[in-house]
Image (cartoon, rainbow, N blue to C red):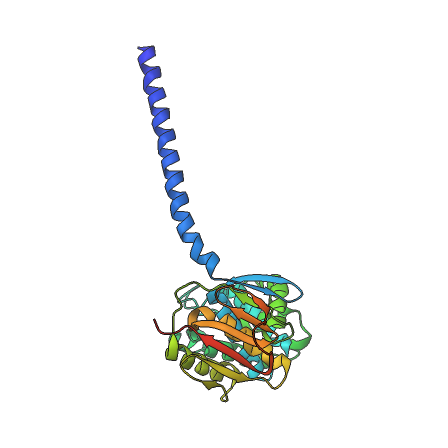
Length: 285
């Protein structure tokens, strides 16, 4: 009887081990498939520091930064806004949250921020945040977390401070204080192509930056750059929106970013252009 019991136990152990190995192998196979798109679509921002975001987060950060400058607010306001969105939503345009909170800043319709549909618009949400921040007396001299808390009135008032360094890096890059600082790796299947992509980019530049002078055609667009800082603002914005707007190539100054390489390289086949930012979109399939 004891021998039989040992045999049963041994058989059970073997079965469990085989099952565990099988589950591990399956999880590894599935996990590899799930990880690849994330890696393919990551964005690395380097401007006296390093931040890694995915494509959606990068696009949202670029829009938040642009809206702040369009409102003629100081760079400090952009740092505060980005730190707030980092903490509240992870820079994601959430459909819900605590109670009736919505969007990038988790603003609440019941507290007068707007309708859920309005708050889910990143531009509307950013504008509302900046408008509220501008009403805070002395916010420019406050710590990032204190300025954010004056607007958000969170139950965790110190939570925003931990994002101040990342937000400062993003601000330096997105406002053109660094060269070739935003590099995104774009997957092989962009959301848009051809004319739809150029129209969306032109509309986005108008809404985010207030630009109306970009020249677009079926293959891409050219954005006037009055000075290098403006040029890098627009170039980094275009790369930030590469995945959702089908951007294939961006050129400015002596550098070129391509979706294929996912990084900035020296231009070797043409004369550098300091007067405009050139963007090429994926052609229609």
